[in-house]
Image (cartoon, rainbow, N blue to C red):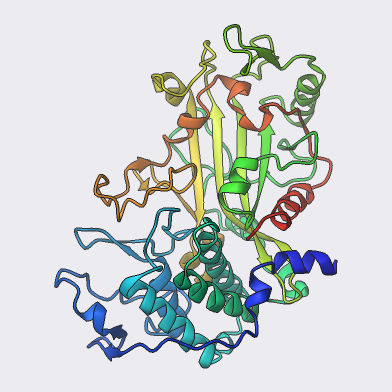
Amino acid sequence: MKSNRLVTFALLGIFIGIHFALPSHRYIVRSDGAQQSESQREQPTNTPAFVERGIYDTDPHHLWNRLYRSLFIRIASDGQEYGYDELDPLLWSDTKRLLSGPSHQQAIHLLDEFLSANAEQLIADPLKRAFLQHDLWAVFDWSTQRPDEPSPQKRELQIRLAQIIRRLALPKEQIEKLPNNYADAVASKAFAGSYDPDRPQVTFLPSDLFQPEGPWAPLSVIGGEPVAPGHVSNFSGRSAFRVFMRLPGGRQATLAYIKKLLDFPHPWIQHPQDYDRMLPNPDLPQFPVGTQLALVRQMILIDNQGDLAPTNLTEQVQIRVHRAIPSKILEVVRVDLNEAKTSLDVSEFKLSRERFLLGKSGGLRAVTPDEREFPLFQSKGIDPFESSSERGSPGRQILSSCAHCHFRPGIHSVLSRERRRLTAAWDIKYEASNAVSWKHSRYD
């Protein structure tokens, strides 16, 4: 146990208690009461107005709100603000923001102000402390993406983030008592509880998704890896991901189908022209039309003993209903995806801190059909706010983006089974444990 804690704080722990010289910065006070460095004052006059709202306190000038905005808000070339109440900071591996110039100076100043004021004591609400720790942890992990490119600016940022992350840490007992917001969302009756084939455009949040003996079967893979390794890796192990399957025939039909997949001898076959590649076996038993798949993302925190602690806080839910099964197994994604897109009905929900803290529908909000986003998952690391070739506005339509990865027909679209065998999960905590184990092995 002690070694695990040391691994968790491999970088965090070595920064705690270090004595360092704080850089000197000169700040002015803007008319709205917020502090601003002299270098920021020299920015173009089209800089957008101060955002008069706050997540962590009703006062937008509260230190927690100012720190959050300095790390999460991005401003496009047209002055439009993005990033407020997003699940993850809009930061990519190529991002220079926070590592130089005014944005770095402002972040360092606010982090120093937080530390010197013992601002972790300003808010006792465990939920708010959990959210802020998770937000700062995301920025810390981003700063470690390129360990081969160290810099004094990165270290300045990491030292301060690490200390605040530790100060905000909750006891394990409090983490275990954090609310189950998925259950709260279902109880709110704000969303349809099941799929309606006559109204496929209606977003639904399955009311029976987590029922132990319900129609949804949780999936795992043989071998001890996470069932959704790409998702765990992309978000650096700060979240656990669970995959569920539901066949139209109910739980027993679903379990019987999963066993049939597990017993199938050759789920993958050799590519006829390329011996380094494998292809999905077209004879693999296919699930029926109407099968539903769900991917659930749940928050992990660091407790006050330095251990990683899974929670009941659901951050995101993605649901795919296969109302048609395309006939052709496509080999690559560089194809016409219209058939794949039209064969799926997609619902998605994201956690809103603002809604959750106001007691609205467990904090979950439904993604709208026309909603767009800046892609963080499986992105190429290019920062659209800093790239001259990007427009600086969200370009990917969220609900139609599933087909870009899950473009193969039916069961072949389930990427969890690539080179691995699917099985029904035998422990509801298994995937959270897998994500924790994965994180313990990482540099960050």
